[in-house]
Image (cartoon, rainbow, N blue to C red; front, side, top):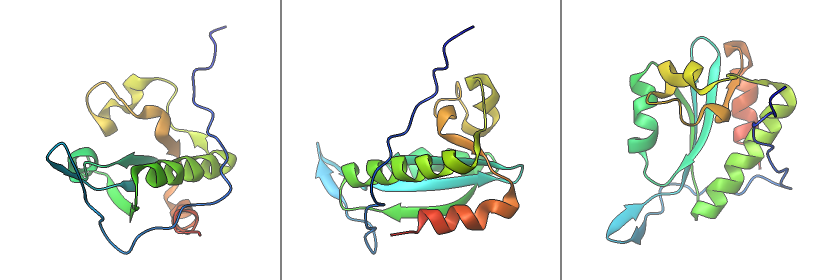
Length: 137
């Protein structure tokens, strides 16, 4: 039997505080904006990710039928990464991973399904619970 290669999210004590809007950082001549996003598809797939490239990262998910459920800004990329891990660990307590193989994620994520292990199977009627968790302090 093949070893399970799914990530094991580290439990962190708390969800880092959001900022009230974007806090761009200039790095190598580019403005980076730390964000944690939650995108859902109507058939019950939810992806939780982090980026400092904004719409360039999560925009293609919206083009593939995803809906932005939550977009949070953070002071630093480290804070957004902790927020991502915090939320994913909470979701993993309640829901299952959406995919067992990257190829299953391609219709949602494009390319070769990169980011498939950040996706959960969460029925739409549970999305308010996801939002409550995402916005928890």
